[in-house]
Image 1 (cartoon, rainbow, N blue to C red):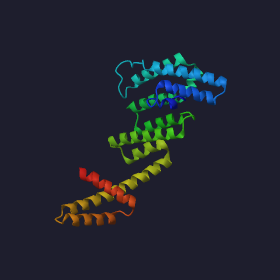
Image 2: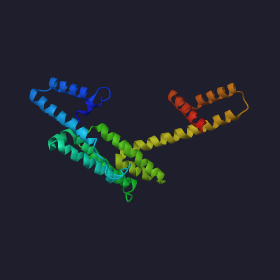
Image 3: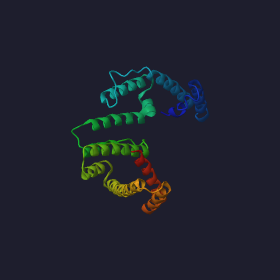
Image 4: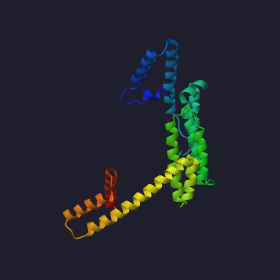
Length: 246
């Protein structure tokens, strides 16, 4: 809600101090009538947040428990109705409610074992497209990215083909984005082949009978020959550290 920004400082200041700050801000920035109404909404909002603390999830709520999550959301909505009218709820919690419903619908799609990854992607793309314009594009992008990661993992865990991965990406993001992701995959595969070859040669140097100084000199020379940019050199060194931990 519009008050959340102020209450994000809770802990640095007491609730009483924050409420006083908000009232001062409302008085300074709004006409008298609007300021009075905003102050009333503030009182209602504070009472609402206190009432929320009394909500107890029904049953054993667990991560991924769609029905349990739905019940918690419904309890929260009932509390909102005790303190605000419909217009106020829409103004204060409209985006939050849209996201809550999105999360529930999203969970149901992921839990549907009759759907393929491509079908899930298509359904999720529809959900994202249905989000209201009041939600920033950045939120949409972050949702698409999260879904892409989850569905990609699902396809790979099931041993899905490159075409299945392509179909899923295209259904979720469209053909152009799928093309770009395929290009990234190809570049990453090329890099992985390159770095694996480098690490294998580096291992041979480390196993040799040369002195430590000579080994390090040979590795530095090999690294510089294998990678042409500063970024690739730094990335290769990070791979070395991960490789040596195995």
